Image (tube, each protein chain N blue to C red):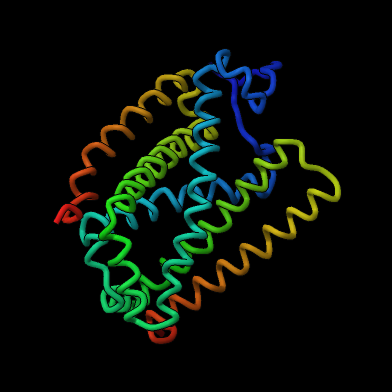
Length: 131
Length: 123
């Protein structure tokens, strides 16, 4: 079903012009994974203000949410999370042997769907920040 | 494009757990985003609202499981990415130790916060 051959090092990013769709999918999945695990640690640190006092938690969250830059970063986080989820589902199916011959098309579909979901979510994510 | 790219050695226990946690996280992460950004809005968050949700045993258990699986999935992914970059020997063991300690601290901190929100374990 699958074949193995010398694809060269994906980690050698100087070869990026030669990358196939599958290699880009690998790179994007890795990048979004690093962002998400970094965010996980940050998220728990922010939520931990609840350990100081209920008021400290509420003030911290509402102060952060009043900043445009934080809202924009949240849109970025959504983009990263949605791509990682959709590409992850694609990978789970591929691991089960489903869709092996359509991997490039399913990768492009993940990208397009991510873009559509993120654009559609922008109004919700920016609601109230301009006044 | 029948080739397969992965940082994991297929068939290993960590490979399998990475995929099992992935299947769980796909659903729970989407639910988490939807609940806290679309049903509720992030700028409306207060301690009282978070507290009310966490006092429900079902929600509390789901969030604890979410914390543990997300930590495992994320840190295991980082570890495999580093191995993929050629990490071996003493460096590999040091990184393994640092990641295990960081994961434990993250989970303990998350659990402490969850218990404060819920006002104790909601049993």
